[in-house]
Image 1 (cartoon, one colour):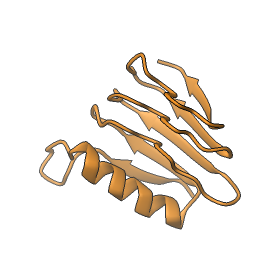
Image 2: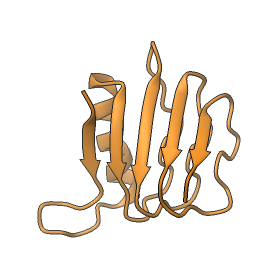
Image 3: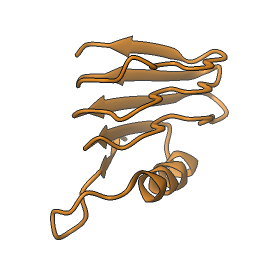
Length: 99
């Protein structure tokens, strides 16, 4: 089952990147299939790993370093705009940009 993580809080305010990363990490411990609704958050997918693989679908604009230090077994599909440092120091994640 896919879990959706929204980059906005209940009042419609953008969640800062550090807090968003923490929420995503907790969700990745519970499921291997995540959809992230990004609003410019940085470091999406950084060092994320899950035994058996992890699939992230990112919707909306990403901040810097999408997939940075991407781990083997992780796939990231981005449907929004990204900065030019996608996959910085990637060590095995498969990253697809649909933009």
